[in-house]
Length: 408
Image (cartoon, rainbow, N blue to C red; front, side, top):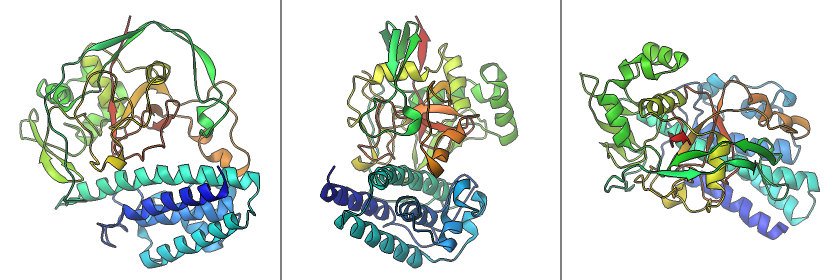
């Protein structure tokens, strides 16, 4: 990509982040409702910090302390759980900071003064900002959806409705297959190297879990029956009082759910919509209850490899909620990140990026599971078949769902 194209792409990605804030108040962007969900204002500043500090190697001591996320090699930082306690810098100051960083990047690109290494870091920075665009939406949804008023993020969002497609199965022969990103083109370090894996014959559900299946699990007392749960999952259900997915409203019996919070506000649960905000524990329990399991990431990638990653319901489609669960393996990209049963570990031959960027993905390879496919909060063009997202098994504020698998 030449510098003119890169400049345009940089501007487009940066502008999109700001566009996500247009319906928000300053107060909306400052709140941090839980340790894992950062304020919108922090996301806007952190992504700017990445370009300034990592790409341009221009370190501002104050902003480095405030907006460094987890890079030990780049110095001390504000504790993650305390990001929402800083009233300064103000939102206006953060926007001025973004503008100053943008001017520096534009000047460097116009003068062709960035080295090949810096250009590679700039490309990474754009994908990094797209990750934070999704986090802005997930974290904001948690901030708004857990407030007493549960206000809508936007009143003009139109959610999908329609008939429920019956579940079906697509069989795959398995064998020795290759997964992972090829050597050319952009990919995160945890997607490489491309390598061979032996996969037994399997079947994959032709659509992800729909709300209808979750409603059935609730009505059958699934959240009350330890039979279906992993031990750690059952402990979380008991200690945190889970009775349904995050944002769902359950009646006094604990067996009927009728409404849930979306970025369009509180709406009736549409049975045919793709189920979202499931933790790994919930996805695994529902799979067991239905006599199935979650797929491995290799199985998932085999099925997705022949599909077009841009063909899906992404944030660009401006629904900001999963669509109707339809058959045909057509929803493997977009709608919801799909949990796999694969632990998030390194591929054999994995090599982290040099310097501070070695901390980007590799140091989180413990206690997490892999998700695949992107979501309705992901920007189109950001996701590919080899993309490996990862979260702890109890996380459910992300736009996560599941697709079932079976042995053959």
